[in-house]
Image (cartoon, rainbow, N blue to C red):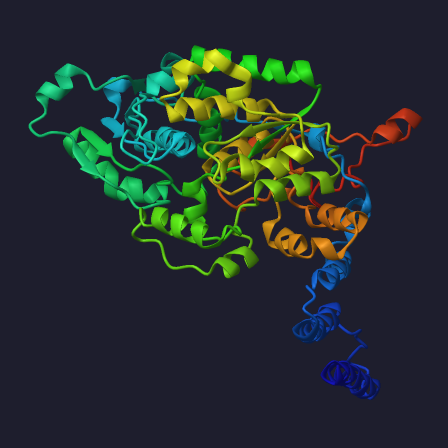
Length: 528
């Protein structure tokens, strides 16, 4: 404590001496003590105290954050203090998805006049492959190539031998994008017969810029006429010009329609959820053994857990050794099902809320799920709701994932418990479709809070959960150009409706200005 007092006295003396010197000159002005300096000293002192008492610094972190945010975001301060509607953003109605072709967009090239045929081999699970298919459409446009319906991955961890036509409506895919890219189901026989060599195969670097495709890929395509790109996932830069980004959105959110059997079963499950409850939450738990092993985190299962997950982790030879404690502090660990339930109850969802849980095999089985089911007894999965209807899909992990995708997409609230492909893809889609409430746990802050849970009453815990989750609730102001992957934050495809203040409209006041809208930038823009 003496060191804390000394640090505080030093800061005050420095400020006092500085003030004295400022009085001696008219060219300088008095400046207050920096909030960041004081908060830093307070945190340092609490850290010293923690060494002796063992208490976690969640309280001071909570209050220091409030001071900092008031200082840095004065324009939003009032709104940050008002209660959040946990079911729907009050500002969602001011935004909508917009991905129409621009008036200056270049007409599509015909198949016969294209630069060649582009074969794509997507990789990974359903949603990872979805990113590859979406980007393949854009790459074909960049190269002025004819796209051959992409091949799906049959060799990965999921071991699903489904083809494109088993999951997506291939005719819809081709016709919807007909004005953007020529697409065929296979390379014409006469083209294949005329080739002296088999199609050239190559793998492009991850997140390659359009210039890379024009400089390195196009010459090969022109020379060989048919070119195959392998392991095609995240092989195109996230930052593209607006027209190409809009094409990404048309491909992802409109052209990739599931086959009729998947759509029918998915809608039947949604109808059953709607029959039981007016509103429901969909939770993507992602607490399968492979996910936990890949994360490098520890979830309290002792030596048995460490041994089992370490063995699974050997599948990825290139993964580095990680500190489980460090990963949790960095917010890289998914929440356990129980922690997800605590977060939802802390946010204000009551125990009669209906939950749809999208997940594969949960590590630890029913014992792991029991605490979540006690917090939310109205707990359902596709297996519970579909029954015999699910049997034709059971051997195909990607088709099962497609059903979960549909039910999660239709939910009132979606909880993404990790930052994987399904979480990113669905979060982006829900933003595009009207900023439907999408919650991502602030794992970095919540992990410390969960550790300190028994040292505080429920009211205090709930208050902190609500505060730490601000900025992780899927609000429109979370969209910023260049933030994260475009598939998760499709900022070029989100437009803003004119803002009308409802209270002023009812009282007849002039509301032509939009300065009261907390999410409108200082310089008015149509797009976010």
